[in-house]
Image (tube, rainbow, N blue to C red):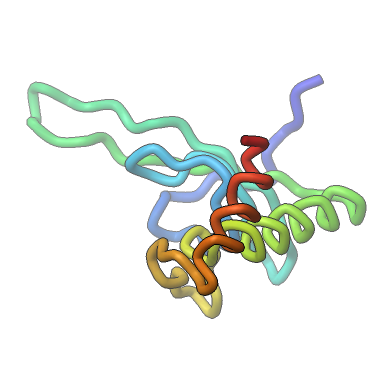
Length: 117
């Protein structure tokens, strides 16, 4: 059963919280909408060859129940502890880029466990 979005916003108007899928642009993750954690989904924008520019990207916002909100909070917490903060937004700003934490051997082991390697 397909859920109905509660709102569709332009990409630059979304208050991202955590990105779980990214390919040049954010495609899926959690966001804040009306002070509540919601899920967002977007499709990769199309390229208009006649205008020689990318079409505007739209993002669909989906309401979450309390259980789904906890899952997104857990996903973000686990990713931040095992991989890093580079896909998390705090106060509207994205975390630092990817870097190895110290001790590097422990961080690489946790990182590999997270990705099931």
